[in-house]
Image (cartoon, rainbow, N blue to C red; front, side):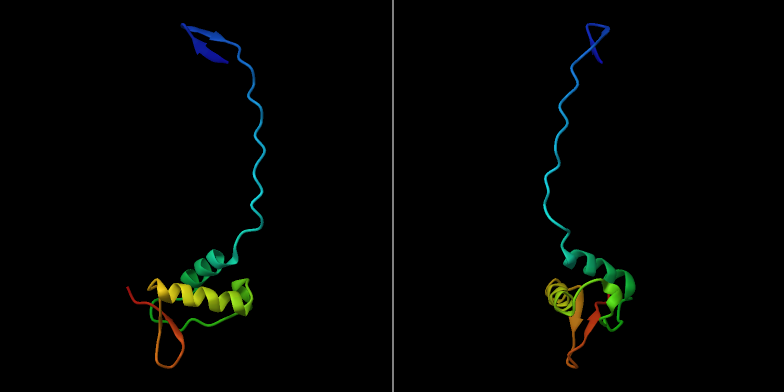
Length: 84
């Protein structure tokens, strides 16, 4: 229904749109969210199966987060959650 000239009128129902399939969600954003939720600032970030990704995806995510300043890679080679 539509409101035209002060009166309700019947209108044609629009055709339903088919959703575009983009494939499964990427793992990197999911791992990023889990890291940010699981580790406090200053904590050592360690791999676990609960992250829901392979070790390769996990390491890729750590490198990306370090490049963005969300994690710090220290002299000992470990990644730490950045403080503030």
